[in-house]
Length: 118
Image (cartoon, rainbow, N blue to C red):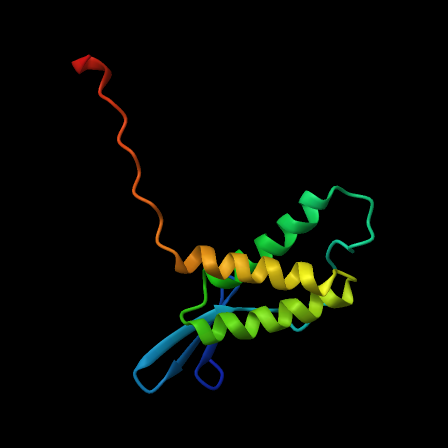
């Protein structure tokens, strides 16, 4: 059993923080994390590099209970990817596209015709 330290508890790759009456959640990064990910100069297709950035952004977005916590994690990820030689313009465009995608409401799904009524 783990007990909270200074109103903070790490649980399932998340950090839960209690302040006054609110609980906020964000990504938990272990102190032993040294940022070993796919280097940009690796001999892999560009799709894998872009997918890694998108996956890490999604991993940051889902547990973040507000935009400021997500923004903090984006800054950490940007620093990490710059250390891995990713071009800054690629990182910025991926982050911008991700945020735009999350802020834009999804279009309504088209209903499929009922085959039995045809």
